[in-house]
Structure formats: structure tokens, C-alpha cells
Image 1 (tube, one colour):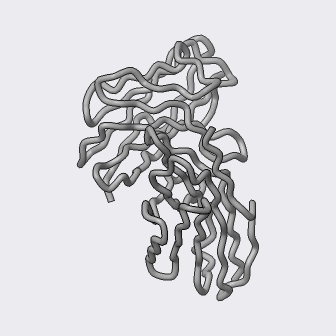
Image 2 (tube, rainbow over the protein chains, first blue to last red):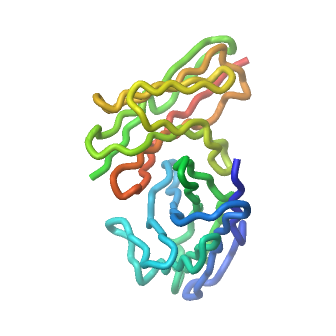
Amino acid sequence: GAVVSQHPSRVICKSGTSVKIECRSLDFQATTMFWYRQFPKKSLMLMATSNEGSKATYEQGVEKDKFLINHASLTLSTLTVTSAHPEDSSFYICSARTSPSNEQFFGPGTRLTVL
Amino acid sequence: ILNVEQSPQSLHVQEGDSTNFTCSFPSSNFYALHWYRWETAKSPEALFVMTLNGDEKKKGRISATLNTKEGYSYLYIKGSQPEDSATYLCACSAGGFKTIFGAGTRLFVKA
């Protein structure tokens, strides 16, 4: 299947700092990428849908000013957690959708720990 | 609101048993149904994507069916093996192509 990379895989930061996570589709172009967050002992919760060249669509309850998403090209989307706090500590994972098969491939995820 | 539900939440079977789990989703505005296999500390592995009512897909001992009219999909595992132990996630894409995941079925296969 198609390959999606995510960087960094793990990040530890101090409270109040901002963290940028990159999601890249390596061998295909993805007009749509998704950002998910895993809560403890729960499945993946969709945070936002990122479309290349347009503003991201955020799910209810997700603060767009806190979780900035940029999808500048067909192979790269970034999620920036601004002014991170300990409650933002989580596993963040992105996925990219192929066309026309509509398959979705996941990155390996980023473990964020905010001290 | 797109609500995807999976059952059971967890399942314990013996090696060699065949098993199946259910994913239910709203039938209106349906676009695609995805099944993933997810092991801890790894990214979800795509198993199947189905779009048409009546679709059946198979990969080795794993197969899936889709009923878009009544809004459900079944995932079957024949002759379960310990390496099949994982969380099986289903996800539904609706109009607008937003993909929402169910909570998953955690499968434990005992040797």
C-alpha cells in the first residue's frame, strides 16, 4: 500500500510551547488528509479534515486556533499544537486518502508529551 | 451526526475458532466503509474498503461483507491464530468524505 510518514514520532515539550507535526504522503498525492487523536483506551477521534489549498474543516469541540492545520501541498499537511498544555498530551495520527480508490493510509503517529 | 458502532467491544477466542464482528453505521449519505487492523504502537493497517451494497472482500482468512441499505458490515476471521490478536476498527466515510471510526473490537486469540 501507499506510504505515509509522520514526523516527529515522539516529542516531549514544556507547557506553553508550540509543537509542529508533519504528515507526508511519500508515493502518492493526497488531496485530503485527516488528523486523529487517540484518547486513553479509546479509538481514533477525528480532529479535522485537511484539504489541499483550503482551510481545514474541524470537528465539533476541536479548537481551530489551538490546533492549526496547514495543507500547503498535495503531499504535506502539518498540525501545530499551539501553547501546548499537559491535557494535550496524546497520540496524534494522520491519514491520507488516495483517489479514486478512496483508500486511507495512516502515518505511524506522534506521541506528544507536555510536561 | 455520523455515528459508527462496533460490537462486541472485545472478544476472546481459542486458536482455530472462527469469529466475526459487526460494524453499524447510518445508511443515509453513505460513501465507503473501511476495515483496519490495529496493533498497539503501530499505525492502523488497511484491510478492506467497500463502497457497493453487497460487496464482499477477502484477504487470506479474513473477509468482510457490506449492507448499505440496512447500514452494517461484518468482518469474519476463519481459523483464528494468535497473530490475529489486535483491535479491528471500522470507519465510515459519508457525504463530504469525512471518515469516522468506530470504537473498535479488541480480539484476543489464545493459543
